[in-house]
Amino acid sequence: MSRQAIQRLGFAVLTIVAVLVVAPIFLVVAVVVFRGLQGISWEFLTAMPRDGMKAGGIFPAIVGTLLLTSGTALVAVPMGLGGAIYLSEYAHDNWLTRAVRLALVNLAGIPSIVYGLFGLGLFVLFLRLGTSVVAGSLTLAMMTIPVIISTAEEALRAVPTEFRTVNLSLGGSRWQGIRRIVLPQALPGITTGIILGLLRAAGETAPILFTVAAFYMPQLPRSPLDQTMALPYHLYVISTQVPNMPGTIQYGTALVLLALVLSMNILASVIRTYFRRRRQW
Amino acid sequence: MVDPISAKIRFEDVSYAYGKDTVLRNIKLGIPSNHITVLFGPAGSGKSTLLRLINRLNDLADDTSLTGRVLLDDEDIYAAGTDVAALRRRVGMVFALPLPLPGTIRYNVLYGPTLGSIQKQADLDSLLVQSLQRAALWDEVKDRLDSPANRLSGGQQQRLCIARSLAQQPEVLLLDEPTSGLDPISTAKVEESLMELERECTIVIVPHSVQQGARLSDYAAFLLMGELVEQGPDKQLFTAPKDKRTEDYVTGRFG
Ligand SMILES: Nc1ncnc2c1ncn2[C@@H]1O[C@H](COP(=O)(O)OP(=O)(O)OP(=O)(O)O)[C@@H](O)[C@H]1O
Ligand SMILES: [Mg+2]
Image (cartoon, rainbow over all chains, first blue to last red; front, side, top):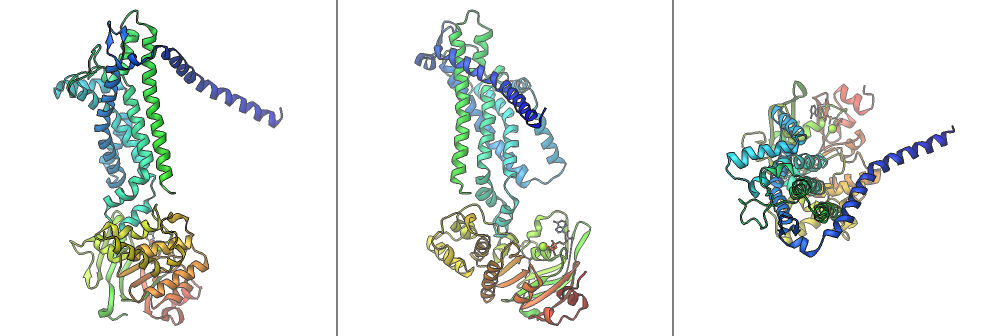
């Protein structure tokens, strides 16, 4: 075989592999969109479920997921960002910070059901928060914080040290350099990390299983200490726990969850390009 | 030796080490007020370290030890309770590579002043003009103060960095091979602005060549492997060095 033929063969193989990787994703999205659209209506999005969830809408699940995601953000963003700033800008390299880093890497690998059980033990039972929006948000935040810390720290470290030195040499404090130079430079990376972390939280079932999710609750939570429905758990319930569930409702719910996640993803890209354009570099 | 009375900065028997690695030994040096002092020597002889002791930028390095005293206006800048930020406002620094901060020309020049007390717009405006003029950059940038600083040429960026330091109205300006990345014309412009500045400001420069050192020197000190071999006024070290090692170095017979 000539070298050109080998090269062409190589390209062909790689293309096939690439298609094989992407095809299932397209297939899943296509099926969900196609079958889900039949189930979506104004009522489906805004009404309470009825008839043992076999009719009506999924409004409380949508609201629940939005509430849980916001609650998670409220806790995980300041803590994750604070941790990242500490690790990248202030911490010295010693056994403590090495241990923290090791913990972060390992936390990212822990199965989400373990977070769920931990949340049950710590927040629901020990801190007596009960199965509630607060307990669920805190559990999801525990899972999200390591993601935010790692991505934000990476973004902070990507900012050249020289900028910090210049700030100090002009009589600025460390914090002034962080606030005025380092954070703005790292913001696109940080935002992406935050959104990706929250995305994962929004789609998880296991952590909310024992800490907040209501099986069937045709009303909105009235306080942060109330239970709530949530999209991923609702999807799990109507797909496996309720017999004779109409497919339109199942796929409709899946489509709503997918749309929510995708729109957050798009938001992340929009924010990134916006910052990149505003930063005149 | 400079008359200790007129010295703006004095090193009194300063030794300095990174870990166990002593890089400056018993430095005794007086830097005259409102003149250009040239600090030169071969690579690794400790010039940058000496310079960074003056604005305490070396505080950032881990595991270092200093003995002796460094005095600015007869005050020990390493004494307990020294306000390091205030010291760094009095002692500006320009680095080897131009390091504009991300942002506009105006933002760069006014970065220092807006960190601190100066907030009145009129003051900031006049400071902006004044600093750019003193760095000999005003004419080239006066029409594009709000364009990004990194669109300037390398030479302009370095003068912008000088202007940024000057906006703090420093008493001392430290420059560590400020023209090493610049072409001869930009270098000449930077040197010109330095000679203008020495009237109002004490300048300590590590030159990027012996020739540059000779051009700028009002006072010079030769460092070799952490030891201050020789110091003297005017161009003395370049024209009539007393120490054999200085002579070898300035005549290029070093090594
Ligand atoms: N942060 C540091 N940690 C450990 N050693 C250092 C550090 N900075 C400098 N040194 C060492 O101190 C010595 C003097 O370095 P310095 O940078 O002051 O020399 P220099 O005269 O400025 O050299 P050059 O002409 O190459 O810039 C060198 O041996 C260098 O390896
Ligand atoms: Mg150096």
